[in-house]
Length: 339
Image (cartoon, rainbow, N blue to C red; front, side, top):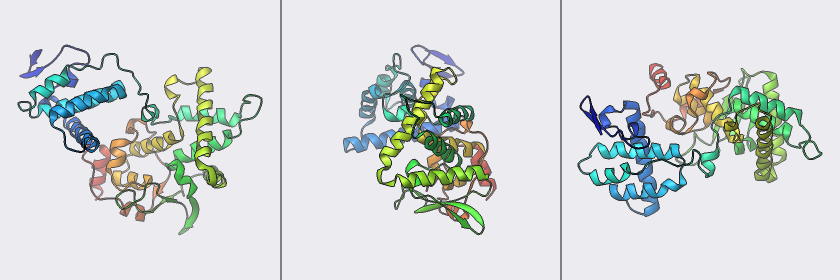
């Protein structure tokens, strides 16, 4: 243990230092994220237990969860909990000592759970190579890949529009005031979620080739409407095969092995964020009721290419909650300045 600038920090042990920093040494944006993460965990544990846990019980529950987590998740959860407990360290000294003693040494880099295997981006160069691989439709076990072309179109169409896979079943291209518009039934709509029953995305800046890809995707999904789960499994399987071929031949890094249909929606979100769109517009594009959803849970801004070619309708923007996320962001500054 050492003292620097009057701040006591633990410097021994695996991953020490940033994990155990005093609240006053943590940036304002990180403090916001830590408190938010702690609140989510507390709500989750209370729901699972049927009552609100004490801080000691919370720490024990968190430690029991460790075996299900990847190292990165554990270190985030631990850091958030340590931060909140240390804000009132006198009352939580026992819980702090118990949690501080649990390290991340030996933990897997990646979780075995499904959410840990989902890749939240499809970089442009990776998408380009995958599209080429799918279009080439290399023979597999003596036959042409049946779904390779459809998987290629689905991936490209989703990167351009950000639709959830299941939303393609209700999507349709229409003309609104002479503007080509994609009308979509919001996939998670109810009284407290989603941006109304539908959203409208204006596609007037897209090339005809991209519009054709979108129309082709709509038609293919519609023709498989009676067996969508199996259809999406086949598309994901085709994407996975393409990625495996690219990895095996040394064209892309192994880290991209878990690209899926949903990865394309995350890439669209990253592109929208990196284009510095106000979060209200990002929410409208994605069909979210709250501006917070994309800011907290979707792909990082740094993974985006800095532009998107579609825009939400004014009506879709108006249905998004006015409440802004508390996470500091350049796009939030832009949003506030535009009001």
